[in-house]
Structure formats: structure tokens, C-alpha cells
Amino acid sequence: MNVLIVDDNHAAADLLQELLVLQDHTACCTYTGQQALDVAAQQRFDAALVDLTLPDFPGTEVARQLRASARGEPPLLVAISGYAADEAGDAAGLFDHHLQKPIDFDVLDRILARPLAG
Image (cartoon, rainbow, N blue to C red; front, side):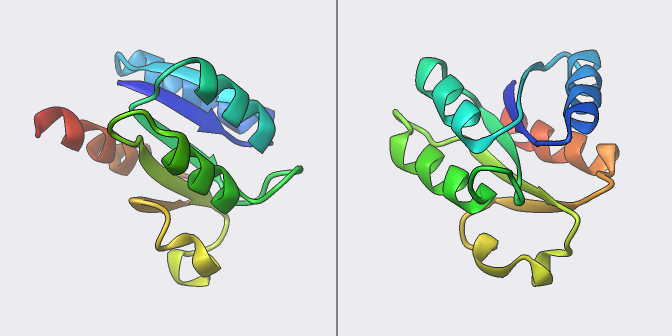
């Protein structure tokens, strides 16, 4: 699975990338919403892990634009946030899943495995 990581916390994003690669995924880190959209315009991703709080614009806007610009099947969108899902505001309708930081990697692994099994 090709995964886009969008998180302004460089260390957290880079660690998540390393963990995904160890699980035989391909992963690309971006650290702003605009970087994520620029990279997504150049290549297709099966999933995007999007921090809701980014320095340039909200992760919800990244999700909206990723869905709108998808050629074919939109990516699986997973919100990552320091907030619980019920505190994340309008993110619930845009994302397929919500993970609270620190991310439980076993849960993320199961989420990413589901589309491959289906």
C-alpha cells in the first residue's frame, strides 16, 4: 500500500514512515498541507494519514482536496490528532477513520490491511 503521511511534527511523521516501510508499505512524508497536495498531484496514494492541525491550513481541507482531486478511487483517509474523534469537529464526515495520538500502530496496521483484504 502506498501511504501519504501529512504531519508537521517531523519526528513523528518520519518514525511513522519507518514503521510503515517495515510493514512492507511504501510511505511518503509531507509536513504541510500544501506539500501533501503537491505530492498527491504527482502520484497516487492508497491511503493518507492526515494530521488535523497543520501550519498552513487544516487537515480537513487536505482531506477535502484529496477526495475532490482523486482520479478513480479516493484514498483511504485517516485523521491523526491529539484530540479524540468526538472532539475533532467537522473531521468525522471527511475521514474514514480517526486515530488519536500517540497512534496505536497495531490499530493502524489493521486499518491499512482491510482494503488489501477486500
